[in-house]
Image (cartoon, rainbow, N blue to C red; front, side, top):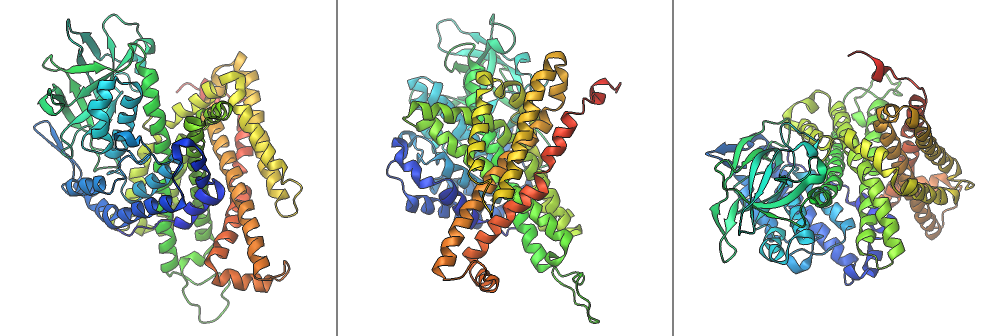
Length: 616
């Protein structure tokens, strides 16, 4: 199913009314950019998604990938598609213009990524990993590395990957066995080892692929302290910097996966013939710290996969519910009952509203976090930049885990709306579900993200990251708690925030005597956090929408109590209808979904250790 639906109105509201994307032009990094430029770029991405990406998605999923004589082949359609994508200039939208990027704000970058991933998730793996790998080389590589690799990668001429996981180690990276041996008189190391689950690990789309590989130099410390990072091209470069002979990098297998069939997930062997050359990136034994830059970038993008695929599934379910007629309306008391579109049925409307509220919530969560990252990286105000970095560190695991869990849940609800038709391939929902699931697993499973949030981020700066967030939320809500229109809603969000704080302080007390108990509840705690953050962002959007509506009522000379005139304007004016729906969506989230926070708190405070004590 190639139809592509995207809620551009919600994206524009979020970017310009909620986050003030144009305000970023005050930062030196973004001077010269304006709304007109942003909208041109976004429209270009939307057009490419609709005309090129979406129509090829189902066929590419069906074709999958294959390996022949150690060479991986992606679907044939990708060869032209990849070149067309390079030609539109969006390959590296947020990266350094000096090396071929566009230098756009990350806030806009996540919008572009959502549009493109929503149309064709498998295809977007290669560009996404390539730009992240190149950014890491730009940050930590030598001047020669930057000169040789960055422009070719930022423009998509070469591709890139990150190679972390090993069969015996999984997420325990300190247990890796890949070795790097210095070579006397040379500037490279000999690598030997095996990596698995390497996304876009090999393909025919580019003339070279640059692998970033973690390994341990002979004699360096065991565990994570001894990990170094190496740049390992598929083909070594000749004196002119062009790809030449193969570098003893062998693809041994491509995984048969549940979803993302058109993106090859590879097992790669380095140094089978004893001649795999890798060049050290940065300093020895700092490899994991360097890699975390790429992983954290990837975690935000992974969260966006949940946003993109979940919202794409919602748009398809909404269209289907508007068109599919089945059964009379429950309030129809006539003798000649007529079937109505299923969107008229209360249970279907409930499912659609859950998808809409969660979809707009996780979109706001990821975009707001990207907006924070713009200030963290480029603010000239040192205090503002540090505060933004703290919030970014705190929210990144929430973005990754909550958005991907919810995105998958949205595909499930979309399938429920379509019923049997959702379960078959023709309508595309089952592919959305298959493609979405991986996002909760890779880049650190969502359980690992929860442990990172509770075990590390909540403790940083003596709890300062969390308390700064609490203060920001409290200050915002306090402005509305006495408001006639929004006071009740503000109070609900504030009470949910207080429940989150209560859980956090409770962990401090119980964790001293029973360290396992808080960890048992790390995932529920992260879900509490996700619900509260989405609720407060949607609440913010509702107040903005209300203020805009007030101006519209005034301009139309409609009294506050004239419900009939307001209803008539809502019916004929799409913008008014959108703003009204913004308020209703926030209300639904606060009163129907946010109460989960209190349930999580109750389970956390139960002192029940059955999961820890049972003999399984």
